[in-house]
Image (cartoon, rainbow, N blue to C red; front, side, top):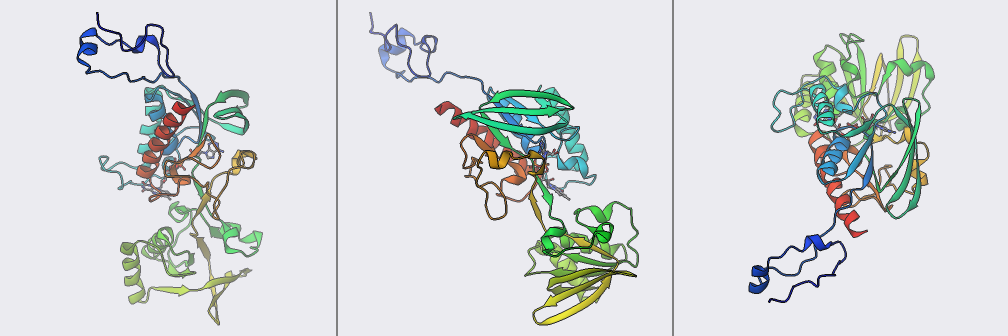
Length: 360
Ligand SMILES: Cc1cc2nc3c(=O)[nH]c(=O)nc-3n(C[C@H](O)[C@H](O)[C@H](O)COP(=O)(O)OP(=O)(O)OC[C@H]3O[C@@H](n4cnc5c(N)ncnc54)[C@H](O)[C@@H]3O)c2cc1C
């Protein structure tokens, strides 16, 4: 009679008696070692934001045996892609798809995979109860709800910086002449033919906006504060417009923006020189900031350390400095802000949560 590898009454950490079904033949030959197997406990995880990152994170958590709950402030999940009716050429394996269609697919997958999604969510508040224990309260379509969650994932994305990024007080009467939506010039609301346009910014969105406006017949001045960061492909296209004297590129700071009878008077300071121009419309393309505005005091309540740009400080797996809080998608400052990065970030965070909950 061989000796059992594990005493009959042994119930080790993370193991149950039923985990130890070792045949006596293996025990005799010593092939199987005494490895304590993990017991699985399903944990509820709240995910704030139902864009690509939040949905990917929920899908991975569900497949890993947990109970993700997506809290989405909009009427439907899908995130920023649901607002962009343009081809998305950046996703391998999905040729020809538009961002809107991608958002629909993500939404369909939520119901096919039976993911719990609360929409129309507002007034989210969090009460930390202990390590990996949070009381979450919120209102969903007017109804108050609360539940306990082992982890919180921030996946609320980013929003464009507005006139505050200019560091100047802007007259309220100019609000309908200043556009800070990166795709605002494509809505078809205004004709750009002959428009005197000022585009401010040095990254991709500024350069693409200048390119679109020039193509639509506008007279464009492009102002960058420092050396442009836009991808070289669009910079070289803009260089062609500069060479053919269709566009003026000025490295300057915006000193003043004032209403005028026939447009907007703008003073630009380039080193010691002051350039004064008059334009019909200003396109601010000054980057993005985290979308934390509908979260009440949640960020300060969680004592979440942020970097100089207002993003949560996190490790390579999306773990924030406050235990049990994670971030992914556009809030996770790694890789280009894109759908594929958001999907990958959601998966990375789900795996990190699964590993962290094992340690508890
Ligand atoms: C103009 C533009 C064009 C782009 N074009 C492309 C492209 O062609 N290809 C590409 O791959 N990427 C593109 N991107 C980037 C891409 O859309 C983002 O990188 C991606 O959507 C990020 O996913 P996310 O889940 O982090 O955030 P989001 O998609 O922004 O989703 C965040 C979600 O959180 C919700 N939310 C916000 N606040 C709260 C709150 N307080 N409570 C609950 N929910 C909240 C929002 O409603 C939203 O559904 C583009 C972005 C912009 C702005």
